[in-house]
Length: 438
Image: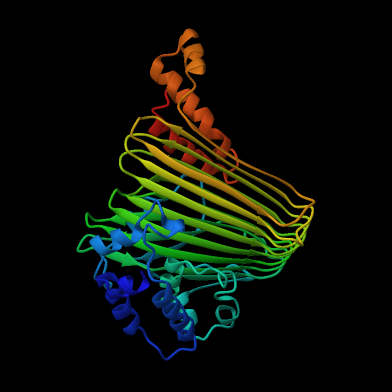
């Protein structure tokens, strides 16, 4: 299969793009290793168990076989302001077609926080980049992460020093300008949280233009002892927007990491969230809500690897699907032999609102330790007819009863959001989608 992939047009385009990169920096050895891995494993086909229900390679070959190069975008600040959330004050970093825009980004000057774009860090042979790049992702042999690494040119490098609390969230805006041609963007982010630091990060996505766009975004998050990190991802893009996003996290002792993924629209969206819990006393929270219709396809792959004892992980993903939307959930929890006294809980629940909506869900536990508390489960069904009948008997219309039940289903995930303006923003989006009027 790898040989077939190597001969495909899309692989030719990837190789051409790779060969056009500047090879003079020390960083290029990372790209070279990743390109060698990609040439070995190839892009995944549906025969690959991890991509069984989501054929990203077919989309690449159909829509993006030339891996187009960048062009000068005409996106103005007004387009970015569309993503502003009322009441949410953030430090803003903007990337257009994967390239950092200093004109559209805020000048971030926070004591104890280093922010620079990856291109600058490569040119400066940045110490943090050399020390931490690839640390969280070293065991991941995913083809799209390898592709991202092989073509890494830009993205965000954020280093929060020990004992620093960043009051305002840092928001990363990834904008694809497909007004002139299809776009392939490839951003790589590296977040380093020092000991006892605290910060929140947000990722937003937007496509301007009518041509198709493909984003392959990878974010590494390295969390030191006792640090508290929140990581939010809001995906409400166009029907022509394809995306693969990988978040690779490494936690040290007594750290807390919470991830929130909200998916509302797009063409095909694949989210990989992998966390290595490599210190005692860690807490990991993973929350996801996908509310999709039309032909949107969302695939959430998560993995929590408990390596050390006395840790806890909580995972809750919920989905509401209608029309011909498709959802995939594949969640894995590993508990290694040394990870005694681990508490790990995983749940995936789905509601299908049409006969043509589909969800494939597969929660998994692999446990080598014998003194743990772990559970997992999944449900897929339709709205509770008895609850619907009860609400209608209390005077609510059919539409209001339906909206109320769906809202109650979704609110369990919404309530986990710590940033109130973001919570209100998401609540309004979901209410609008559900036609909530009661």
